[in-house]
Image 1 (tube, rainbow, N blue to C red):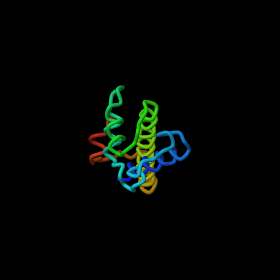
Image 2 (image 1 turned 45 degrees about the vertical axis):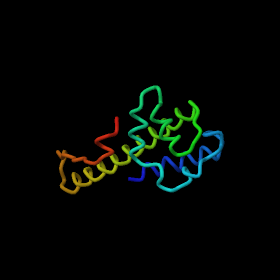
Image 3 (image 1 turned 30 degrees about the vertical axis):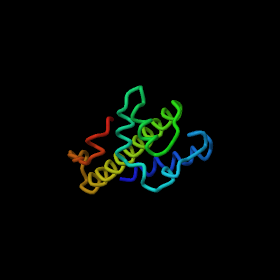
Image 4 (image 1 turned 90 degrees about the vertical axis):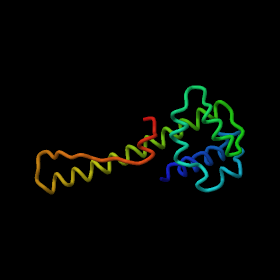
Length: 123
């Protein structure tokens, strides 16, 4: 739910350090929640041409270079990967605690997952 906002804040930080968008953020990018979580899926599913990345960033009023597009994609990939790892670790910890509490050597579980990010994210 908050992955887009996390990406937006990282992009602002990279821009402030002069690593993105020639150091010039757009007023839209400074607006909280403007970078939607669905953008992560669109950006990561984009091919090598980086058309989706450029379109999304230009819609946010940013002047984008090829290097900017590649870096934004890498940020999106890192945030999505980290979120998945944290979710997986949390589920594993809960399952392990249940196994311990029941005094079992092994516990068979099924984990259900649903949601737009899960359904639409390319990885």
